[in-house]
Image 1: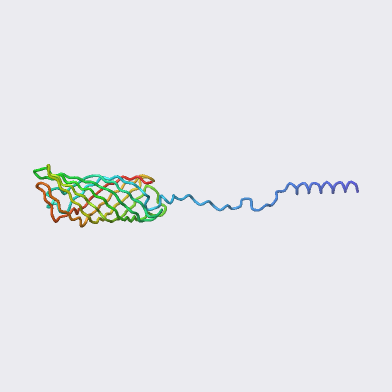
Image 2 (image 1 turned 90 degrees about the vertical axis):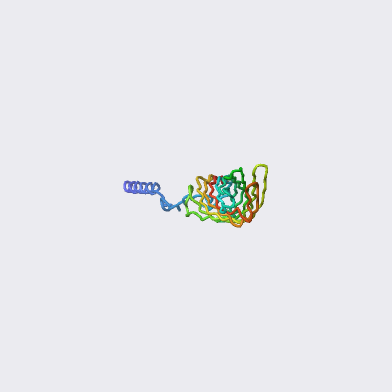
Length: 220
């Protein structure tokens, strides 16, 4: 009896030892963790526009070149500000200053200088969802144009002001988050003017014309 009891107690001890070392069931070994959402481009990269300041160079051709006697091609520089109406709004307010000059082909030297201040509304076509820089931003815009023309021929000078409208179409290429290169074509309308200096007299005419510009901008 003592031998059998000892054997049973030994077997029970072995079973209890195995049970105490067995792994406890605490749920799934590898509980499924919801995958972290992939990082998406920042909203500022997908926004149609960001506030920016642009410096540009342009060439303007006047429609009524006969009236201007050769002063129909003007070149110069400009500065403009584009500010969206919201963080991701396709609409923006644009405004700026440009100054173009030209020397006419008359026998007597005649200089024409045109300074323009403009303000208008721009609509940018949003890029595809998820597209980051570099990306393209086509846009159309229009607004009011305030022009001041100066005509000089030797000691004779004259100046005049005109108010009209402009319409432009363009394409902005975002080279990085801050650097923007833009190309646009602008047309002016209803810029009536009367001005005279030396051999050149322009009456009942206008500064209507078209201008092609290249702009380099810095977004902020």
